Amino acid sequence: MENYFRCVYQKAYSAAQMRVKFLYDFSREDLYHYFRKSQPEFLQRVPQYLIASYLNITPEYLSEIHRKSVS
Image (cartoon, rainbow, N blue to C red; front, side, top):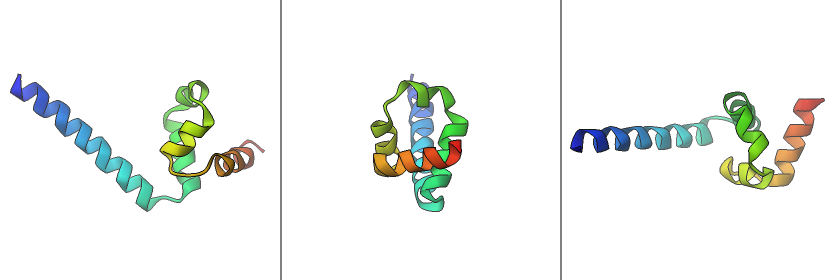
């Protein structure tokens, strides 16, 4: 049981570290494009304001990025 929870903790910690790395190393547009490429079905199910909050940008800026990428 201890081994299982240690693995779960390590995966969660690793995911948190990757998120921090992405937030500091990439521009906001790059973050959106990476997120869109890696989680396309997620974008269809979750409201834009929540995605903007997760990416640490405003919903208006997210709409602008989305509009640029579509056209």
